[in-house]
Length: 130
Image 1 (spheres, rainbow, N blue to C red):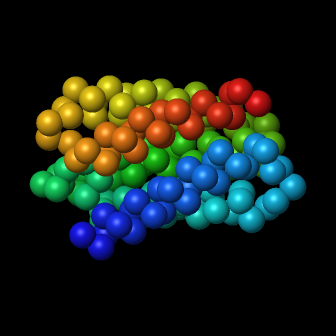
Image 2: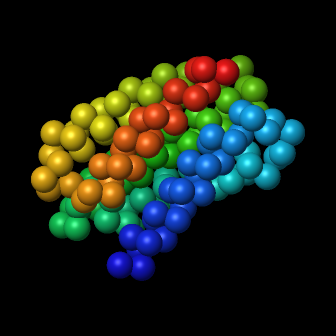
Image 3: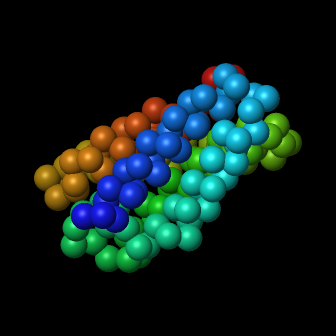
């Protein structure tokens, strides 16, 4: 249960950073929060029960990879690198696939993960809007 709470807290902080980063471009602390959250999900995604309680480590790592892709794409867009579009579009596509999968399996997927998939889908195209 503590792992679920930690994952929720990291997700909320990461989403707030992804929303605030385009508005507060001069604050580098927010950019580093996005980078750390991307690395967190990329390295420790297998450790948390992401989709369902009985899910294996590979399923959890795939969902962690999708989270890391979206947050790292937001980080690259905030640093204004020339290659950020190469990661933004796959991030939107992966977030779309995750929300479709979570919605189609909504009776086996944890309810908070369905909400997180919806929120991730909503924040994934933020670099495209600005």
